Length: 281
Length: 318
Ligand SMILES: [Zn+2]
Image (cartoon, rainbow over all chains, first blue to last red; front, side, top):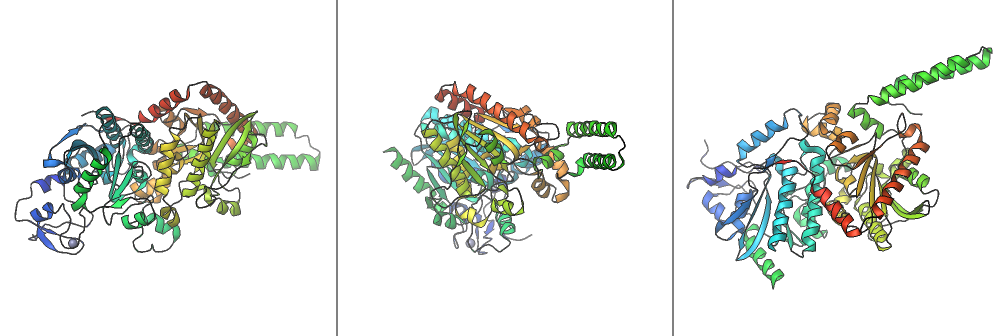
């Protein structure tokens, strides 16, 4: 047993585990290897205090980072995936779902909740990468659609926090059509003149990038996040060369004109609050 | 003619037919009956093969080298009136995505579609039907122009996917497709989309947000190709047949799952076996749908289109 909490780069510990972390445990930054108490790490919004590395976190942590007093109301919490295609690869989709639910304590790859941000109401749909790679299937699409309905009915701004490898293959064309569905719903939010903020976090790729993640009135990203349509491995295979340094990072995407801003997670809440007030007044 | 592996029995019968013809010419033996018998056998064999295609074979037919591509449909349907337009007005002209004005029996339509090449050289030129972001932006520019002049949009989908290149990423492939989904679903004019070959993922959907989305009988439409699905989920390229079945990518499955609006039958032996008949069927289907859609109030039509896409998906309530 090591005396610090091991966190493999790219894999966050489960939400459950994190919540129950007793004082006295340690976090080791996978980037600069600095070791600090988990409590301090959490207090710094899960950003390394020494190198600024943004740990991948889940919806519960994002809600905690953003909503006033960590108070929020989750909607459609119990919705979970069906298996409309009776899909089986090396494993049955239903088994994969069961395992993921057991492992993560989540029902699918997204949570939708509304609360206050410095007193301003906001609905957030936040993806969970720990649930089948944050893949977008029918539940992700439906929860986003219902969150948008809620925003229109309650005149509330909307934010999606993307963190996804793309569409969920086990729902095949149903997953593909969630790109169509979410984009179609966003036209209604737009018509209602309600702000839509898209926060792209590490990683945001595939069908999520090619639909709601890129459709924000403002597209914001966390520093260093991988953002792209095709994954880096596929691009590398296509061009048959090594990729340039920094390719498909948030900084690269900002430089090419597809983001408005890169915001550190430690400053995220303040930025959102300011933005919401600017939109309102 | 090119023959797919499962079409080999047909190819062999054609060889027999040729041999019998030659024999007749050389030896003055009356081969009339033999020829008729073989021809009958060819049709029966073709019918038998095509009535029992597996999903993977369907995918193979959708990529048949003799299959007509977008420009062939447009040229036939618009009876030579097609005027191709070029460029996205920002970066360049994408050869994998074509579009322009054309007339269907006197009615002006904006045609758009991915274009594959008809030979080795043209396949390169067309980038194998894989558009870059400027292709999607050209498509959107043309759709917006159609909207401005109140002309319907007809798109032909035939792509192995949006191009996953370095420059495509630099120029925002994801944003380009996303923008098309968002704009196309609220276009004020009727939009008809026909999958004529491969409907691979976001690259296909980027021009497929229509009032009527239809698939030709021997095509596929899904989130990923069977080969890539096999490589990711099975971690091997050897499970493409299983993947094709698991993905439920055939027109029948897509229609059953309410993810498309209709299926257009192909001539016996596939679109390539009788191109003229295929063009005629597609033309009459477009005309039929245009008449229906044009009669609807534009606001209602948009509402219906949005509702249709918003109803897609299956979940279990908590
Ligand atoms: Zn660090």
